[in-house]
Image (cartoon, rainbow over all chains, first blue to last red; front, side):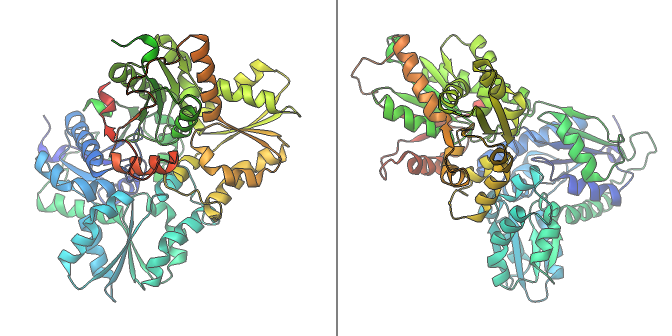
Length: 278
Length: 278
């Protein structure tokens, strides 16, 4: 068995979105090995019930721990972070980092007028997790939430061109109440949303956008430091990334290569697994 | 055990869409008992691989046969019909009706200029099933297909208002090549699409729209006649509808009541099951 600190970091999401966190972790912690699971056979999570999200999240965690023996897991999925963190922390002994707390910390640090917006999936917003966590940090904050059911399907199906009226109109509709509420900071409460960042930014000039994947990568670095879990070996796993999905790997591999800015052909093999067996 | 012909009809779909077929079956065959399964825990199917669609479809069938002892099953899902019919027919002994063959028959009967359009999910279009079945009927037909990844998420999330520019622009984009191809008949190759019918019809004046659910209900009636499987008893199951889903039932029950035009409060209980155990 490898020494504790030389085991990989696990990252999972319902689909592609969590790769925004993987990219950031790769940049900040280039020595670490990352094992990613994208539940492409059951994406999206954000329009399902909390009970189903919890059941899927337990399987995702079990896969990462059983097959990759991860030393820590980043839940790079806003919906799981909003609905399942207490359950995951109570069910597993490795440190588990969600995206909500790091994003909330960044938003609290960024806001000047105390008016913070949150866009996320219906399931995340219904959980109340963002609002609750923001108010735990500062009960004077005013929080404005918008549940955005269509943004994940738009991203998963490539509707992200800033000149395209379809994602633009959809983003506009979801953001309208937040614009009217005069927010100065917006949490992109789902790891898919950074792919719509140019469209969102154009609707909200002067508003600080908080990327949950970036925030979670920062929190992971802090955790590895405080727990003395930074990788120290020099074996071939250093900096390696491995990818697993629950549906056909080809489409994911192409999207991931584009997404992570990997050179053509340099993208590692993506393996398919049966997540319901975990 | 009940007599063969007095057992229920099974109907399944990835989500809500198959209710368009249920409604039509209820109108045409009001004595029959219907047992519906909507795989709301794993919807959508149409952006998944053929292999995953087949695996899910086998589980859906096993549930209907094991728990409801159905005498026949309507696959009210274009994606399963396009990818899994040979597998399902070979794996189970009850008659299985898909939506493709009945819709193709209706389209062939309707077209005058021999130019037929098909809109369906990416998985359905990639299977080539509509094109192949149309050409088996008449090799001179010209077939124009459009894969429409975003229409199921639009319907599942309630973006169906004919005055809404978001579904209107999306439908316009998918239909543009079919309009340019001068089709006179369009197969709505997914049971979700009838909910967008007003928007689709407005883009295609004079074009005959073929509803797969309606076509499949007609084919079911013919099958029950030819196999002498029409229900003959008068017990309390007559005309009953039972609904099962793989995620939280509440949202489904509300949508289904609206969808089927049931009076308020009259909608039967929707039960949740674990489909991956079948």
